Amino acid sequence: MYGRGYWVWGRKDAFPGADGSTIQENGTATTVSIYDMSGNTLTEGSTGVSFVNITTAGVLSGNTALMYSAKHPLTFIFTPNAVPHDWYTNNASYQNNNLWNSTIKSVCDPCPQGWRVPTDSSWNDFSITSMQVSGSGIAYGRTYQSLSWFPAAGYRYYFSGALRGVGSYGYYWLASVSDTYAKVLNFYLSGVFPSLTFYRASGFSIRCVQE
Image 1 (tube, one colour):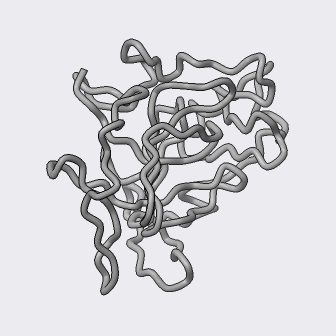
Image 2: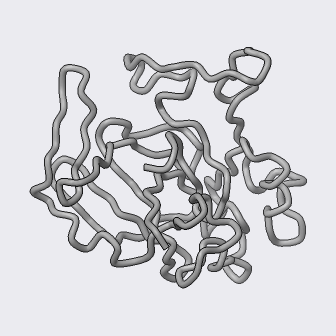
C-alpha cells in the first residue's frame, strides 16, 4: 500500500488513515495522533482533515472543484446529494476520466516515479483463498500471490468523509473508469472482487504498480 492513507479518485494528495487520525473507529480502537510541523496535534474535522460539501459556495469554480482541491489538500469534498458523487464536479458532463489516466501515468497520479495507480484487470488473479487473519489485535487482510499484504484498511465515505469498515473491508483504487464511476479492487472476509465500480468521491487505499 502506498503510504498509510486514503485517496479520493483523481486527487494527488492522501487523507490520513485509521492509524494516523485522532478519531476512534467503532469507539474502541486505539489511534495515533498526527501533528503539524510545530508539534501541534491535528484534530479530525478541525485542524487536520476537514470536510466540505461540494455544493458549498466557493468549492466549484465553474463546473469543477479542481482549484479548490489544490488549495485545500486536506479537505475532503463530500457529496451526499450531488450525483454523480464525484468530488471533481456535480455534473456528469464535466467528469474528468484522465485525472488518473488508464493508459499512461498522469500528472495527478500519486505514486512515486516509475510507479503508477494500476489499471483494470491488474488484480484478476487475486484469490479468495488468500491468507486472512483477525482477532486479538491482529489486523484483517489478504495476501497477494504470497508476496504482498493487503490490509483491510476500510475507507472514507463519499457521503460525509467519515472512516468506515476499518479492519473489515479492503478497497484499492484502479485508474480505470466505467461510466460515471471508477473501478476498485474490493475484498472482505468471504469475498474478493477485483474490478467493482464505486463513486469517485470515496476515499480508498492505493497499491502502486511499476510502469
